[in-house]
Image (tube, rainbow, N blue to C red; front, side, top):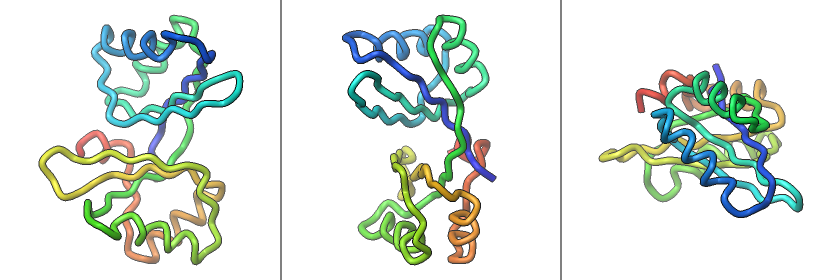
Length: 143
């Protein structure tokens, strides 16, 4: 039902993101989407990757603090108003969006938007009722 993302907690110091991306490159793990949030003492790097299990194992083996979390991913039309259709459904139901990030399919008119939502089950139900499909982790990998 939900997709999974990898969250990497990094000290706010020069070179930490490069350490993660370098390790993933060495391991042959492809980053499909990412988001980096800056907090006062730590950064949170959120990743959708092509092999989450290997990614978690590789990062943990190098001492990174990581966790995985559920997110809702939906495919939208890559056009003006495509995102609004989804956000409007959530807003109508008073469902809070904690954060959003997106990526676009190569040579396509579609994009995938990843949502972290405080009430994921209710959000998924509302989106489905509006005719919006929730993508599984496997579907994202095939995107």
